Image 1 (cartoon, helix red, strand yellow):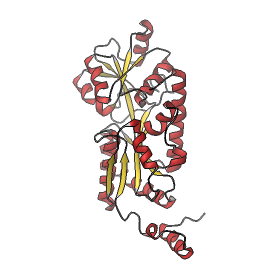
Image 2 (cartoon, one colour):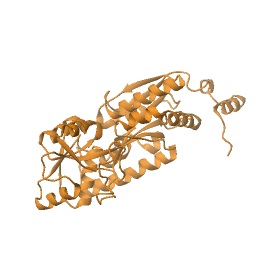
Image 3 (cartoon, rainbow, N blue to C red):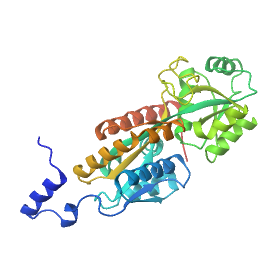
Image 4 (cartoon, rainbow, N blue to C red):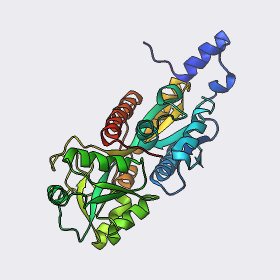
Amino acid sequence: MKQFTLKTLCFLAILWGGLNTAFCQEYPNRPIRVIVPFAPGGVVDVTARLLTQKMNERLGWNFVIDNKPGGNGFIAVTAAANSPPDGYTLLMAHTGEFSVNPAIFPNIPYSLDKDFSPITMISDTPMLLVANSKVPFNTYKEMIAEAKKHPDSLSFSSPGNGSINHLAGEWIALESGTKIMHVPYKGGAPAVAAVASGEVPLGVVAIPAVAPHILSGNVKVITLTTNTKTGYNRSWASTQEDGIPVVNASNWVGLFAPKGVSDVIIQKLYKEVLATIEQPEVKKNFADKGADIGGMSPPKFTTRIREDLDRYKEIVKKANLQVQ
């Protein structure tokens, strides 16, 4: 099928009288609002601000970041879903909103298929299973031996019930055939602090949050939560190396548009986002935070979201997880 440009579509539509004149103006001709389901400073917010800043520098496009935290992301995602499908409201979200929430909660007020058009993954970041430096094990295999020798002796922290970190920890426990009790905290920083202080022996945490504690020697890395290594530190073992390759949990951040936005606009956004995140300084910025850049096409990104959702549904079922 012939690929039409926005100008060609507009010309044809004007002839047929079937398209709003505003659509035919070169996109974008006004600021684009990017809704973020979290408060400023978190990984999704930082990603949104870095991307939009670099796109402004490259293209002169103007963006407004609209932080709408709370409600497990429901507030922000619903607001984006209900926005006009004109390309001037986008959503920056992560694994939690589309691959974890539908696995955890029986009824959520939005649907990926009905309400959104994925544009692309921006970044993909492994998590770490870490331990307090004083525990008597240093590797995944030693940790499992300890758990089997002393049943019910190990617990792990996470940023909260139903978080991607929580599910990754349950996944590791299921595949290792051990019981590791989950201890939820209100955010990544307290979850990391609990491991560093020895309040809990283990934690499933984000790389940026735990990096200072690793450098200080209060926390040690047991394994990545992914079956590939990270360029942030090549010495950290992957789940592939540790014999649990089926465990492959990472925290991606991606860009979405409300369903109904023109495919011409979706493709233009994808093209310009990809060109932006491929810039060396952008790659380095993400790498310094332990992240790999994304860049998947809209169809491939959609497939990834669904594959993650299927895996987490299975984990929730096997671990009999219930989140209030």
